Length: 173
Image (cartoon, rainbow, N blue to C red; front, side, top):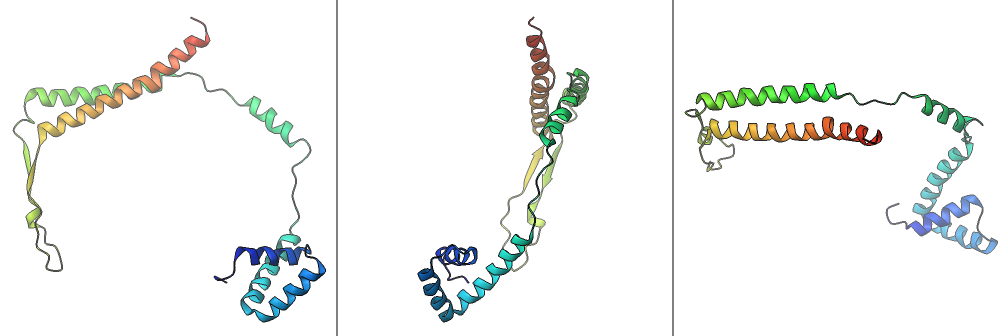
């Protein structure tokens, strides 16, 4: 089946559909008698062809489009609710405030977490050449606070300001 081309599949499907002329049918039958892969493929396509012909084509009811459009017009329109965004923004502001408190108190300045990758054994006798390093907690806290502030600005823009300006623009202020 792998060596059969799409043109032979097209020829097989035309044969099953009855779209071949009499001379093409005779040529095709002689080719079919000489090729067992072609016979197997014809049988596969015949099974598929018969199962597809036995299926009844379903059609929607006469008023399907009208019902869909009527139901769409009945759906409630989501109104602008700034409180959801305000609560998310408030949570981010609290997290940022706590992070700034930790930074200003200086408790993260002296913390450094050493990570020794030499202690991990690699199976198979491979030499471990991974370097050891330490994580400075002040740098980590600054990075998290920067990302937190960037997310807060995105939320302020997307969830609060953009819908607010859209609704004001719709009211022609």
